[in-house]
Length: 361
Length: 221
Image (cartoon, rainbow over all chains, first blue to last red; front, side, top):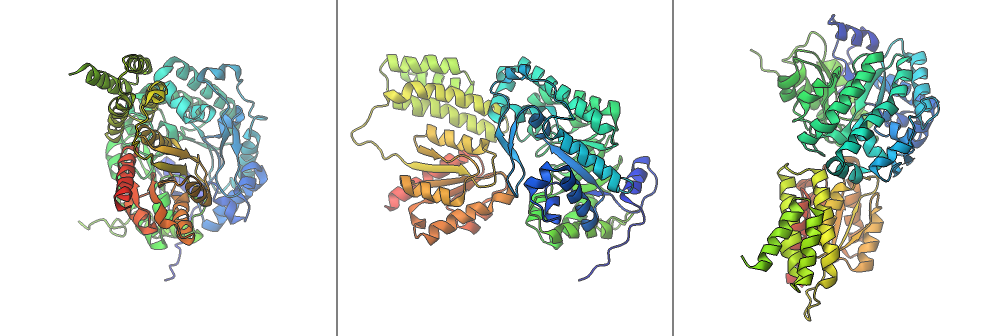
């Protein structure tokens, strides 16, 4: 059944600007968290697109145009800062990069490292150049994002999961120092990227309730994130904060860090999140990336969009529809199209809640 | 409580309390007093690890705590294992091939299953992470494994589990192995669909599952 896509009457940049300023806009903005999948749109290998600024930008722009997205962005992910500090990555052809060799053998070893130069270290130069190209090519019509890792996740990428997680209990003082070093290491990169007028997003999966207790989050991750977000706020708008997985217990604390926007994974119920923190912060989320986008049909996608709109549309401090986490690389393209279409079908502003399943009063 | 039982209880507590030093001291006592090393492992160390597993299920212990419990456990195993008496009618050692499927490198879950099954007396062949389906089958056949245990945290790599089952069928050896699957996106429904023998929601359940499957196989033999 062909559905006419309702035409947008604003550019993504105009739409987001209106949204932020509380002015009228045409439809809900949405973020497909388009990362490595973009390489497929230009038939490039993920490994190549990840390591070339021009390919990275080309892929993002192609995905933006092809799928009619509302954001383009550069993903330094949770590995970017650690890579700049010496962690070696493996780049499979068609899969997200992963750690081949951690930079540190022991938590105290960070003391022999130096804060990395954003113009030279790791792939920082690639990320910065890609962002610059994106601003030049499409920056007048679409917001350009820069996503990088939070302190705990950077520490994990330096040390390895088991060594880091054990150190939280056995060497707390050293961990605090390591987290500080991770913040210092990200700062020059943040400052350089800020000159390009990007919007920042911080991902911190290791701080998830799926990995560590609330007590450890509060003791280590929260102060570190607050400090890092402070660094971003010195040069840019308060960033989006995304912690993958189960963040039900820490959601209030996530707002306390000073983040501008909270991005929620699908393990958190959007309606519950709205009740708890919706009056304090804009919420983003939480289409199921695996079950809906990767394994689902266009029908599943449409249902999930309606479900999210139903739960989030009236969040007092604003709601942006998005995936719960990054779009899986092998997502069937028709599902991304379905997302794009469903947003326009159901998300026209002002909302008609009966369209997406709200009971008529 | 007898002295031996008290030692077992203290060993169990020391594992739960993540007290490596205490485990070492107590394990040495078992050796010095010529008490049964096997029983100290089974009713002391492994018992403690099972309790830790339950705390993990209940979301009181998380990954950091479990890792430290396992350090304490292994410190004790290092001391006690050399002293385990070889019985004349030694029970058969069951073998498990375990790994994280191709394309995935998250291995904490797999490592937890590995250490719990190791503590329960199984012989573990750990293929690590990013393991091709064929490699699971090859290893299982090479060591005459009883169980193939597959783990993944990512939905996008689950298909590899199905591939393992298919290869076993194609090679005509499906009946020789019990295939168990686990990991974040995996479910019982998925396990049934791909023809696996079992699914476990967490490491503690995985050990129970594996034990019951090999027990079943032994009875059927």
